[in-house]
Amino acid sequence: MSNQDKKHRGYSIVEILVYLAIFTALSILVINSFIVILSSFNFTNMNRKLLEAGAVSMERVSREIRQAELIDINTTSDTLILDSHDSGGNDMEIKFINENGEFNLYKDDSLEGNLLGESLSLTNLVFRTITTTESQAVKIEMTIKYEEGKNIKSENFYNTVILRGGY
Image 1 (tube, rainbow, N blue to C red):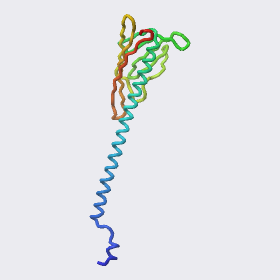
Image 2: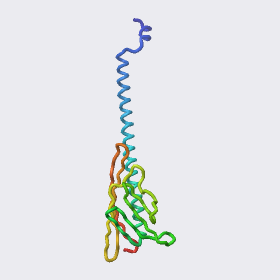
Image 3: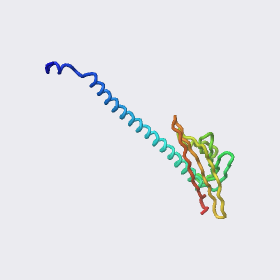
Image 4: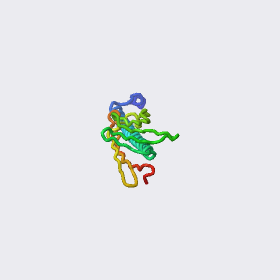
């Protein structure tokens, strides 16, 4: 064969198979990397939502307890009732209740809303009173569960708050 015939021949089947094998290997590597990155993002996002909701709701409960004048804990229904005052000095009753996995806040028997976000539920809520001769405190134990699709994770949160004037 002359040089001109070799130029017009094209690729052999072996060359095409080698190129396809290399392209397939690289494609699988890129797709697997993308899947790992996406999975890592979902895991990080799940942890962020869970920890953020726990920190925000625990801070809200702690703030209300610190400002309360009197506390009442109903252990049978996961309920914390606080006698407090609004900014105008008027008496106000604040309740934190676990209702079917929602962490609801009530002010004077009016629902203010769920302290947790979407895909989050409250699986455990325990309030305990700690009373000494000089002070009164509330110990809070809370477990929040994140559930969206196949992603499920729970996180425990703990805090102890001393009532205003109790230190």
